[in-house]
Amino acid sequence: MPNFTASSPGMPIWVDVSVETTEQREALASFYAALHGWSWDVGSAEMGHYSIATVRGAPVMGLGQGPGGSGLPVPYFLSEDIEADTKRAIELGGIVLMGPMVVPGQGSMTIVEDPTGATHGLWQPAGFPGFGVAYEPGTFGWIDHASPDPQDAVAYYSSLLNKSVIEPEPGMAILADGEQWFASLSAAPDAEARGAWMPIYVVADLVAFRAHAKSLGASVIVEEVPVPGTTLSILEEPVCHVPFTVMQAGDPSSASEA
Image (cartoon, rainbow, N blue to C red; front, side):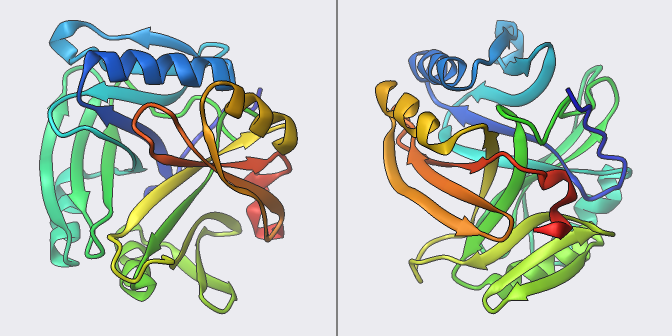
């Protein structure tokens, strides 16, 4: 199992989802446990029952509960100075929805709405480092941002995260940390849509995965779409009816080869 180390500030370090009710939280946790083979560490009532999914003990995703929880995923980017990065996000046109705030014993966080309307977080670790594993089946492999105006997203994130931008094909921009590609930013099909981030998880076999997901109540939106270096499937989970994306296993940890 490859350990994940987001050593460079600005790299994706965590993803979580928030729902409104206990029933939704428990149902979504059960769905993803059956889908990916995840185990869940469920937090206390004082912590809002914030739950952490694990693969062989390594954390891969968070699941929270609270008013307004929509089931939409929120990615977090590694920060070495949460106060300075929050200030920079505001200067670039972001709107702070929460924070900066300290999560006792774990780290500090800020939740921001970017200029396209997509939500992201900043995380400065203390006790909790974020992903414990990535780039293998059942774990995080990529992240995609879609919005009506991807150039706004490119300008915002390349500056905020201090990453370079590569354009492998017209209409798609890639954020890169040195030689490692880690995020795509592209145009949303709906010109009226708000921006949104979509984490993409790795699976061993797309055909088998889709069949398994459908047996658990998921819907298939797009069976397969080729992208540089791999193939994706887009589905919808059966609890909050939020789309999610998976990618065929390959070697996304060296995504610059994609």
